[in-house]
Image (cartoon, rainbow, N blue to C red; front, side, top):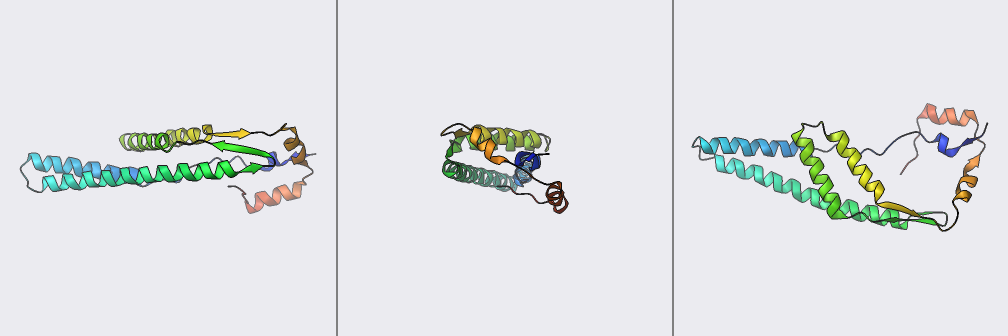
Length: 168
């Protein structure tokens, strides 16, 4: 029985690493609320507690901006220089749109106490995948014909036994 290499690849999907930003942003919102309550009740430290909450929110926003710019530039560079035989790829990830998606995902995750996180991951992965286009330089039949080869069941089970994953 012939098995293609596509059948040997496990069905793993890219899942971004968990982030501490929702926890940090929740803490800053707590500081804002605590400072506001202290300010209403006449405590002089209330304004400083609120200022600490605002500072943490500005810090998180700055990190999200830098992370969006860096991710967009790296993804665009990697995909624009990647070749599959004579075929190429074009990536047009906008850092501004990536920032908007990341920020709204972060706010929605905080407001839903983490319940929005799976949807946020799908939303981010959908945008990243939609921004990459394959530019074929000829028919794609040659790629499929080159990938068919005989693979023994022993090799396939060895990969499963050692749980080897090869990926980018």
